[in-house]
Length: 189
Image (cartoon, rainbow, N blue to C red; front, side, top):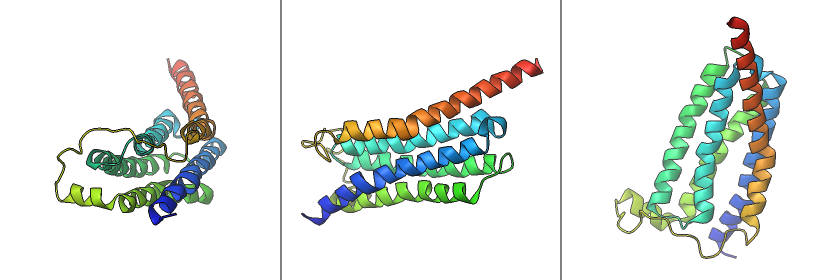
């Protein structure tokens, strides 16, 4: 097995699942600090935005051949994710307690996307060179991968795994925070 395939397997079977596990752990920390009564819906929505910011490049890399367009989306999404992550902590820290465990989760949630992006760059080094040399001709469209990464069932398994571990919990958090916000607005009226 060549180095590129080893790195792809590390992404598929270590880094991507770890990102979901840590995201669930972070959700547990939010629930323990009763986010709905402290920083509320605004922070909860930031968490969902950050998940989408990392989820889109993950799906693109799983479904399409990596070219300049895909790398630009990955890079842009990572930069936006970093900006929202800083905004999130800046917003939340004066409003609720952020435990050492949650800070630990945040360090993983910030570094794992960077490591995954770095590995994607390494695996696709010729495309990175095209990106930085502005050799973008013919690399601004999406082409499906011939053979699915991880095998035929990987994408369905991963999406189910992430829906259970992150999608549903963060949807519950959004709904819990929305319910609390509406309840507080009703009391104020």
